Length: 345
Image (tube, rainbow, N blue to C red):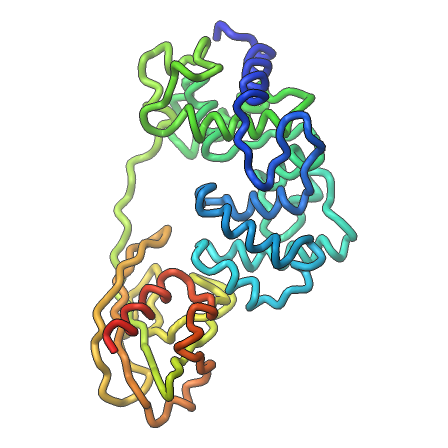
């Protein structure tokens, strides 16, 4: 490297002072530290999700539950419904658990180690909250930071094995002061300049000394393993309608879409197809199918409808007015299935 460790952090922080993204959960350079509740909430929402998708959810949560005590007091099903469409629903379940733990403690812990004891806070989230909200020196490595560091030092080991070396290098360039700004600067750099495809090296404050750029192949890094094909799964959702209402059930707390309201289904999982066996006898009507991709599988979900069933009361669940179905907080998969069933009526 032709740039020293100090030069890297100084260049990046100088760039961040001029180009930091103005985000609703962020304090801009020179402003007081942001509310740890906002930092934590945004970081949980941003896992596996884009900034554009998170902004409206963050605003909705903050308007409804303006602080961690309000969120801690919220019923689980209301939080899950408000989260619907954001995906990765275990985050919402842990969000409520962590809020209650923080409320019991009387406030957010200030150290990485203490933050990691909260439900759902892994090494990345704990480091981000510690650095951004409390100014602690913490090494924050998300996918954007991972990409920047891998290119900066041309780390050629294949992921995930390369992550140890990436973290060591990230630690080496993290300054003792302004660690939170440095972490956010790295995120912004990876998001807008050092992108996965077609990185804008001419605009990068770290271009001088970047080993991947010097080698003429920045897009080679980080080196990813060969992608495995996702399995194809087949399932069925049951649209059971009576007197202008549809039957909804609450999925088990653990597992895919856990704790969410949904249409009844035939037991499909990411590992196995559903049974295809209707839960009630009757003249079921085919409404078509929807496609959905999960982390570990592609799903084709057939939708079948039964109107005015004789024995639907034996099935359990709750009857939800069709006029207010948008308020049920159905996850994206079942919202798509519901739209298909409604269009086929």
